[in-house]
Amino acid sequence: MSVVGDIDASARYLKSSPLSDRKVGVFGTCSGGRQAFLVACRTKSFDAAVNCWGGNVVQPKEKLTPAQPVAPIDYAKDLSCSLLGLFGEEDKNPTPESVHQLEEELKKYGKNYEFHMYPDAGHGFFYYPGVGYRPEAAVDGWRKMFTFFERYLGTPGTGR
Image 1 (cartoon, rainbow, N blue to C red):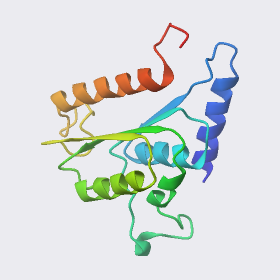
Image 2 (cartoon, one colour):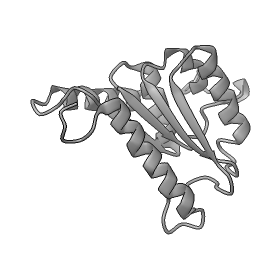
Image 3 (cartoon, rainbow, N blue to C red):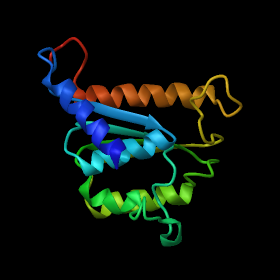
Image 4 (cartoon, rainbow, N blue to C red):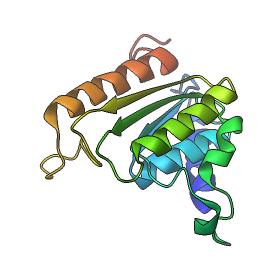
């Protein structure tokens, strides 16, 4: 997984900066949400991660390939930081059922997470001016993300 290695190296680089407080977060949307989840499970470089409607975290065995032999959900036991998940009830990937399945895995392993499911929102509800844009859900999601990062990374400009 070169993406995991690249993101991990980026976090280590940021932490090495003399201006860094050594706390780093990661977030992504769509496949980037899945990758944020993966890197939070496969490395110990992050203090907080946000998965915005990351699809294909839950995959049936028949969808696995030699290039992707393990479903990301199978790494949930290794989640090394707090996780925020933002999802839409009308999304087809991830479906609400997939989100629930991931939530059950995280609960099983006692992981620190919070998930929010937005009614009347589908995939990409942050994406202005796309057809799936949902202003109320987007504003609330961004607020939740900034609050989450402040909680786990510290308040900007305070040194904590």
